[in-house]
Image (cartoon, rainbow, N blue to C red):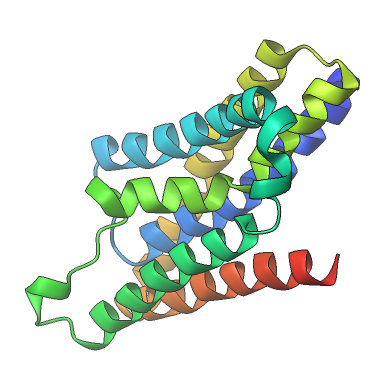
Length: 186
């Protein structure tokens, strides 16, 4: 696998994280530099860690993971997306406030958007591609694309305000459905 192919794989893997980053920023989160960094850093880190996990564990447990990974991603995105829609519909209820740049929400989204990278780790092992170079590229590309998506989302937020949180939840559920359907159809 050439460097160009690795970059293309990284871009493809980064798309879910980019969509979540854009929606988070458009919904009014990721306002300060620290929140933007947290979002991009975690998405990049988890996109880099999942191929390592797939590479290490893939040879022995791939048969056990591959038949449920899409259900795990769907469940996580459905849960977070539903919470986000609820928060957007009920902005006065602080107990349901959803902030995708903090705590378990950030970890859950990082895992959910990087589950596909687990399979890439297995492919890297089978193709005898340099693991460390590949995961470095994947992590950096994801972080960079997430930062760009945050900027775009901040521009959208200026026009559409809190309605983006509802749209964001719907998009997260849609990403989960896409992952689920693509794996069920394969």
